[in-house]
Image 1 (cartoon, one colour):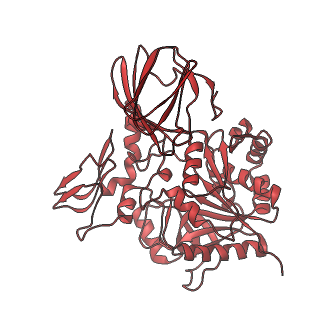
Image 2: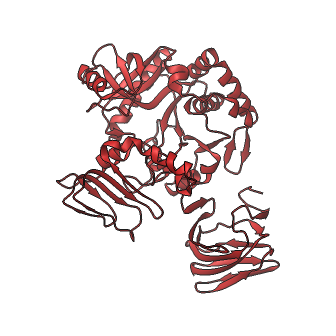
Image 3: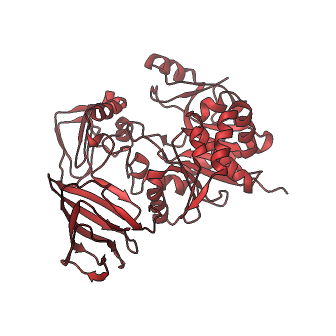
Length: 477
């Protein structure tokens, strides 16, 4: 009896972080946040792509997110994943071709299952049944297979897949599709859903690696050449594989345009409780709501409201709505969004406006994630800055010095190992140390719990680029 091909999950972890601003931003897109449930969207994605039928996942991400991805995988006990760092974001097609070529080197008969990292999917058993149907079709004739969601409403925010006839309601099976359709207007969407012949495009695909290789070399030779160059130049960096700069010569194009619209393919219709969380309206739809359709979080209070989302990302910030209807109100420590629920798809316009105004909130959070933990600016003045710093157990910052500032550290939780020049000491809670301007220093957490300290900087220039690194376990020197 022949062995079933192994399925290699390929999880796409990029993103611009604009559609769910202010919670999601360029520096920390939505897949790393706990939008619904107790785990991040990325962690939930990895969990549902685990099992005997799956190989360890490949995660395609960018340089800024590599340590966040590694940390989130470690938190759920995923140890064997391969994290691949793209030198530049080039949409889904180059990432998929790179992953396929990597899998083909070890498993030329393998299948890759491509999945975004920022979707919600509630019925994992039904999803696995759809994957089995797709794998059977791909294994039988080498088909490229996509997964279509049976629509339950006329949605204008999704692309669609057109079938020759309405699919049946039996066990999942792979059907030929006629074409991909762009996001429609409302009237067109209503006609499409009423016909029963259209599915939402989920952005999930299953391919034999040989099919991917042939499709790209025939239809996108320039992309294939650039990706192959990036793979040839790839190098290992700690636990990551960095693709070479040649990869950045790839065109910026989705897999739909690159190959799926040019080759024969199939689609597996499925009803799995899928949602791409593409707007605050869809987050509201996934949230627990009261009989008036109001969803609240972190002590938010609704008075005489209907069909409204009141969300605070800080327990100390209370969001109170009075007489609101069809409204989204989301508060973070440094920004507040208030929008008509029917305009939730237009939130990226707010990001554009903030970017034009030069506001940091357009792309960055006050809390900045680093491989060793995070820091957050609490107060910023003309010649001083106060930060909170958290260092994971066993982690350490680089050995460094500053040209323009001195620092004072106060340990408020945990234990710190401090190096200043040739002096090394251990500091406990309520103890402090002064770092003179120009002194070589390092901070480490030798304990078993998170280290928290308050850092007070003073000097003529307080930018993050005022760092001279001498040694760094994260290879940032």
